[in-house]
Image 1: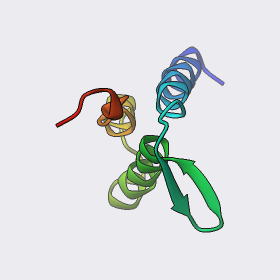
Image 2: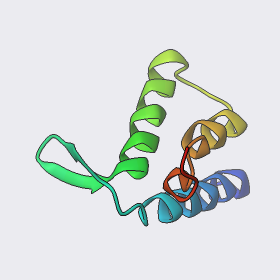
Image 3: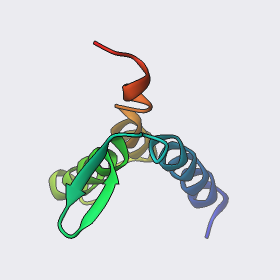
Length: 74
């Protein structure tokens, strides 16, 4: 793992940790996941469908686009 890979992994883990605190559950297959965490994983999978080798910035932006969204009612 290169230092860049390590930095990307740390960023994604921080985003996931924040989104795993979402109190709103969402069913994904047989699992019940925090809603924004599930959304961030879904969007990451979709990103790799559209662009098999996305930049690190794109991966972070995609994963974080709804970070802690439940804390800001619309």
